[in-house]
Image (cartoon, rainbow, N blue to C red; front, side, top):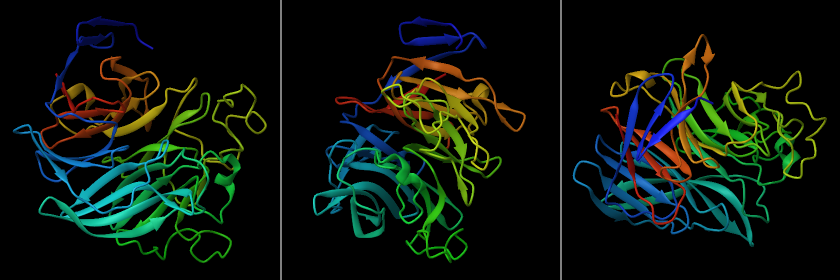
Length: 355
């Protein structure tokens, strides 16, 4: 890691003499989790524990509560999680409960007059499980498909069980129908929604505008966080491998290998874990040094960084700031190239990065 010099709210990293400021909005947020633009200035923001959705206009600093009837079960790491939009359609991931058990679910709604209406459950991960962790829950749209990350709910090797959808990347149509070209749609031993298996707790996902690959950030155990591609029919190997990490007790994962033949290797790995959260490819022009780089949020070490492009992959991670807003949860970029951030904290706000 490069040495940093911190001056009030400015941080300078050594690869370039480039300073950044953070600007606070007047919005009061409690444990926000996801953001999505509905136009060039307006953001929808979810709050995990309160299950509220806030519409915030970044142009005039005004906000409204968006009403909804989605049956969110806000327990532990669960609650109201990711949100994405396309035209008037809004998709939300959340934890829901059945018979005192929890799972990751996706609802599709229509945004109408400051309300989400016609909400429909279009996906629920199976099985429902008796704990409240590792829901995953990021989404990305590519063409007519909706990609969803589903955590393995703390159950380890269940991510290798193809008969369920936990510990996997799921692909469905935007209306919830199962694509006929999903890799295992004609295999009776596999869940038909599965696109990729073997992930632990992927809490970031974005479409690379250059390569058109979808990338995830996967929160590993004690070490082994990674960035990797979503590739049809592949397996990242959890919990046969730990990508260089160990269990929190210090014991080895599987045979102790970071990777094994036949498994998809990640594109970038952190050991020890940084608690990787949201990710976002930067395509704007306001920050030329970030052009086409992948922005990274760290929950554990509370920083924002980026991975620059190098050859066909990524170069050395570079720090933007650390210990300024708390646990960096999600990142969004508007049409002007402005970068907005939320932190997994109580009594927080929406931040804008200023060059």
